Length: 95
Image: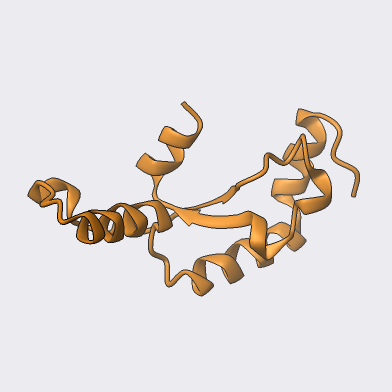
């Protein structure tokens, strides 16, 4: 499938191929937000005590393309380009 514009991207995200890959990535990451996990790991490494509200690893519901889909369509289903994120962290990545 060629992905050149938003319409193509919508078709891709509705495809069976994406739905299967999305579930594989969520399972790989144990349905844990990888940005939350990294924030906690970095805090421990640096000896930072986070507030209680920042100490949890939230449930991942989104699978994010690290290199954006429209810019790098060849990486659309590449495991190394996909990461599980919670809604809050996904929104942060997308501003």
